[in-house]
Length: 208
Length: 389
Image (tube, rainbow over all chains, first blue to last red; front, top):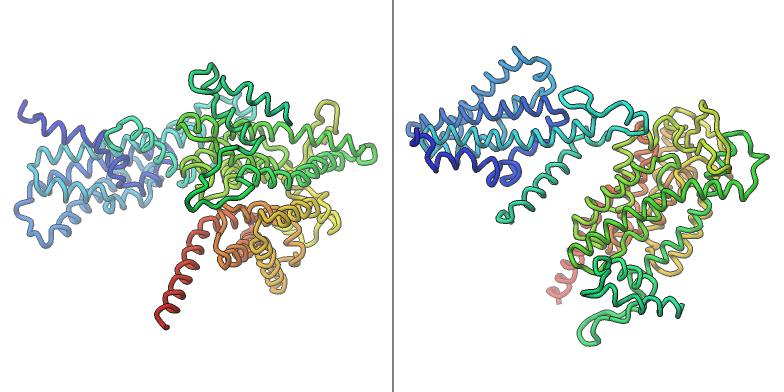
């Protein structure tokens, strides 16, 4: 057990959550972070999907890393990722149809998410299966955290709801409060992601 | 004047290092350098360009140029209110003016307090000299919004644009986009119902302090461009009223005559570039004539220029020295494209009755590219001249 959670393994899991966050520090996967975060629920589902796909594709690639010919490794990685993406997409359609409609093409487009290919190339190809699996989970959750923060702000200020339930009381609206329509547009989420990065860097001085 | 100088000198020690009001040093600096040209100038040696006028004096000139349009806007707010209430014959000139004054004043105060507050705070925090770039933006912002804009969303929009359009880029003089227009764009996209909405935003509807009239709830008035966008083929206001400015619209944008007064001052003092200003009008007129000839727009070229925010944008915003093109040739292209895009958006996009804001913001984005092309063309031309000899 102590072997399984040695210091190196713990770092593979925890580092992407904060100091090596895929969105805030590596600035990868921005596109989907802008597209699916208008509401909190799809943001969480998207974060979970990416976490599962990153973790298992890391695991599979790491298992077969020695038998992959170097010249066709990208294609092999893509095949593995595509298979996983298809599975997740079908599961979503079967069990959470409404959310999968909201996410529309962005589930399929996980295959083009830079975080995935980045982790496969940078980590899974040269590490053992267990650390690779942890690294995948860490990066997926690091991505999901940012999505949840952005989704929370956008849904709260843009629609006045959280998970589709109204949280801003009616008397605010009666006294002239209005939802901010720009929060529901992707342009505003770019600014929010920018603010998250700003706050993150202001807090962690060593990143500057 | 001397008394003011003496007063400033008297309170100065309080704001210096160790004084009890040191936390408000930026505020003192700001007002001191606004009221008096500072004594400290760049060194006499070296390659400094010396001029008798500094940026704060230029900004004061622009503010003075804006005053006619602002005063007329106040009068027009009262006039539209009386017209809507059907009480025009009972209204006096001063009654209408003071009603408008009371309606506009809170917006001016909110805009200045929020904007300058953020600027002073940032300057104090980063230990920089205060730059009052907001002096002009602060008076423009209330003039380009409808009279019924709620104050709290105005405050949010001003804070947003000062932080994200200016301070992030490094403060006054470094911004890519015109700060006042970003404020309006934020309002426009965030709270569309209170910016164009259901045509009830353009006319003040309740009396203030006993002045003005209560307008019946069912009343609504569209701007002339709003009427056209809704499918009308003829306007409900006369061309004469449109030129004078007695039409519904954002507070300061309606009167061509008042804006022309400001334009004269800006051109006479050389603060605004006549090339930019002229080319915006040329671009708008050509494009308006073109669409009218094609039958796409019922408005002729002249009306396109007179209506909406075209004149205001051309005179006070397209010529913003920070965000516009700076090369002499680039100014022609920059201005012409603003006029072209503004009219094109009006005519071809039914969702946006007015395109001046979007046109200027878009060209703000392209201004550095235009400058780059002109500068590099100049460099290569000179290089050719040098090598051909």
